[in-house]
Structures are given as C-alpha cells and as structure tokens.
Amino acid sequence: MRLVSSLGLCVARPTDARPLVWPAASALIGFRAVRAAVRASRASGHAQPTLVKPKAKSQKGWKIEPTAARPTWKARQPEKSQMRAALPQRQAEATGLDHSVMAALQQHIAAVKRAYFSQDAHALLAAFRIDPGTFGAIQADLNRDPNRDLSAWILGQIPVSASPTDSERFQSLVADFLAYVRDHAPLSYASVASQAPAMADWDRAYDAWALVYSRASAFFSLPDTVWFVSSLRFFASSLVTLAMAVDQRTDAVQKRKTTDAAGRLSKAAGMAGNDRSQARGSETKRAAVLMLANLSFKAYFKLNNTRLCETVLGSVENALKLNRTFAANNGQNDESGEQCYSRADRVTYRYYLGRLRLFQHNIRADSTSSLLQASTHLRWAFDNCTLRNLRNKRAILIPLVATYLILGRYPEPALLEASNLSQVYGPLTFYLKSGQAAAAMDELDRHMDWLRFRGLYLILREKLQISLWRNLARRCLALSYGPAQAASGPPTLRVDKLLSAARLAWRDPSLQPSDIEAILASLIDQGFVKGYILHSKGVLVLQKGPHMGFPPIWTVFNP
Image (cartoon, rainbow, N blue to C red):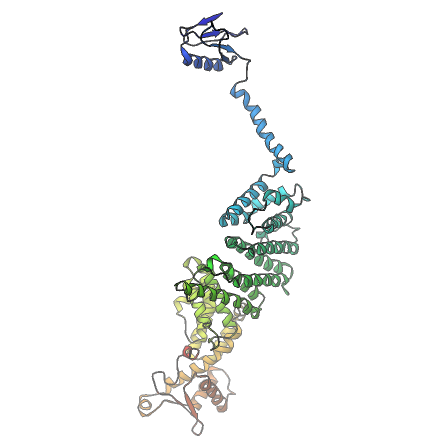
C-alpha cells in the first residue's frame, strides 16, 4: 500500500508487521514532512525509513522505504564506550607499554616534550619540579616495567630535532631524571626531619641526582640554551640541598657529598662566567653565573672552606667585567655589571661576599683590589632585601651588626629588639661603648656557641679588644679633661689614671704601666689614637681637634 502526496512523494509502509506512525495524517508535504517522518520513526523505536529515488521514468517523485532496524542513540552508547576503552589498549600494544596504568608518565613526558620543543622555560621547570603525589604516580608507572631501557624509550617519545645544535643530551637528561624517580624517594624526603621511606638509600640517591645534574649541565653547555637557566637552577639547588641532607644523615664529619656538590657547581660557574659572547648578560650563559656562584658559596660555607670561594669569585668578576664592557660599548650605564641579574641573586651574592670578606678579616679594602668593604656588601644586601623576607633580612643583619661593632658603629636598641637580637648584641654593645672589657668578653663567651656557629666569635674576640682599649682611654680622657686643660694646650691623659681604670675594666690587677704604654703605642701605630707618649712624664699627649685624638673607628678602616 502506498500513500501519494500532492507533490508526487510515495511513502511505502515497512515490510515488518509493526505499524509506522506518520504525523499530520496521510498527506505529507515536501521534505519537511520526510524529516518529520524520520524523527517520529526514531522516537517510536521502529525501523528508520530511507528516501529512495524511483526507478521507472513513469514514477515521479521520491518515496521513503524502511531500512534494516538500527539501534537507537542510547542503545549505541555502550558500544562506543567499549571502543573508547579499547583505544588505549591498542596504543599500548603499539608502544609496548601498558597505557591503562601509564597515565601519569605519559602526561609528564608530553609536558616535557611540549616545553622542550617550544623552549618554554616555565613549563619545563614545572614539568621537572613535581610534587610528591605526582612523583609517586610516575614512580608506580615506571615500576610496571623496571627493566625498560629508558634512554631508548625517551628517544622514541622525544626525538632529536633537525636543528644542527640539537643532540641527545636533553633526552639523556630526561631518561636519567626518570631513572631517579623510578629508583629513589622524592627529594623533599631527604631532610632528617622528614618522614622518609625506611629503606631509602640516600647515598645512591645523591649519586643518581648528581648524574641528573651532570646531564643538565652538559645540556646547558650547548649553544642557545639560555632559556634552560631556570631548570638548571632547580637541578643545582636540589643537588646542594640533597648533598647537605645526605651528609647530615650519614657523613656529618667529612661531608663528602657536600664537597662533591661544591666542586660540580664551581666548575659550572666557571663555564658560565667565561662565556665571552658579545651580547647582553641575560642573553648569554653569564646569566647563570650568580646563581651557580651562590650555590657554590652555600656549599663552601657549610664545609668551612671559604678559601676555595676565591675561584668562584674569579668567575663572577670575569662575567661582571664582560657585562660592564658590553654595556659601555652600547652606551648603557652598568657600573656594577649586575643589572641583568635578579634582585634575589644579587642580594644573596652580596651577602656571601660580605661574609667572606669578614671571615678573611678583610674589613678594609686593600689597595690592590676593587672589592669594597665587607660592611658595604652586607649593608647593600640588607637594604635591598625585601620586607617579605624578614628571615633573610635577619640573617643578613647578624654579620652586619658584628661588622659594625668592629667599625665602631653601634646599632640602635630598637633595631636589635625588632630583629630579636637584643639578647646577643644588646649588652655587648653597651659594654663596648663604655669600655667595660671584662664584661664584654664574658658576654662573648656566654654566646660563644651561637657566634661560633655563624663564624663570628673569633673575629669579634680579636677585633673588639682594640675598640675596648680605645674606648676606655677615651672615656678616661673625658672624665679627667677639664676646661682649664682645653685652654692651655693639647689634651693629655696620665698613664697611671688609665692603668687604674684598666685594672678595673679588665679585672686584672697584674697590669703594669709598661703594659699600658705598650698598648697605647700599638693604638697610635694603627691609627686608632692620634698622639704620642711622653715617657719622662708618663703622659699621653693627644691631637687637638674635635675628636681630641680619638678619630672615629670606621675612618681608620677607610683611609
């Protein structure tokens, strides 16, 4: 039976026994009616009709014939879900990996690959700096096949590009990084205070990470790898942190791992500092020299071996000189050569440089060196350290106050109170200003462990004795010098009066006049006292002027 519309369309009833429900009675008008019929058929769950062109020339128009019954959209969903689930399995068979359990690893490699080929420094750093949760997921994926050749697999995942400067060094870095993830605990567990896995072998962990750092350093030595500096910073800082943590766990005396890390970083700093490319410092490998130098200083200070810091300083000075030369040749003003470095790196560098000069007792800049005083470096670091890093500002202030005490510049009590240093430096400052020598030495001994840990005890005990004798003599002069003496001639101080005061201040009754004269002669020779000793009368004759023969101590260190 056929229903013929006014437009010549023939609608054929399906061959099965189920009735086909058509909308709008039996007269269907145009293609709009055909579409409505198809929709109604789908809604009823019946076989879907097909639009068929008539075969005979005498038969005009089109007709709709039913096709074989097909499942509805909802009925086909389980089949599509099964196809999607089977797709990873087919991919896994092609790559030789179990993709159902390799999601974290594949995502990580994909992120590394994208960052590498786009040279996205931030994305690459984020890919390498993984949190413990992601670390565990990747580790589980890798341990599904612990015997896999990671080097060959990585070359398949991240192929070497066609660039003439490209090589397999980056792929080797990624392979060794994944080998560390597979075999060792996360870096954050290296600290003694952390809850590390019971069976963690930290000696082997450091050796594995040292290999990772070596791969990173080798890749950085290639041309056009300045964009890799942020990732190199991560590998280098992790190397130092891991070395110190491992030594604290297993080798607190000889500190072999820290020594090894310091040597590796010093070598890398030399490579970065010797980049003579005629370009802005931030566009050359010199961009990494301060970062590598600071990490080297951190290791050397931990080893109490500041002598080796001079090699690193040579690399830094060479890089800064090249930066200054480039700036001058291009009409730029960069007197320090440090403008291309971040404030954080500059503050850290000045902090270590100031401490280094202080430990070397180089309070005064010598005539053959362009280095400024230790106090200048520490003060610059303190002034440029932001208030968001109060802990760092306090760390800088500790050696800065010690340097200022030697220079005769005494801190305000409010500053010491705000930085929680009044307990250490408050009484010491008071005794130093008043010349109470024995009390000052007792105060140093009371905080000896605290000061020795920071490398300040010996230099303070040595250098402050000069200030104590100078301040004691000046105070005796102030108490004994009157208006009549001021009008008569240059100020004078009797040696016997200073002797009495010295016996009380030093709590040493065995002191003799000859001892006092020898000490005064030493102070005059070093420039802390301006005058001469009149031995026949036992008198110290001082220079006339506003300072009365006692120039400010800091001027002696800055001739």
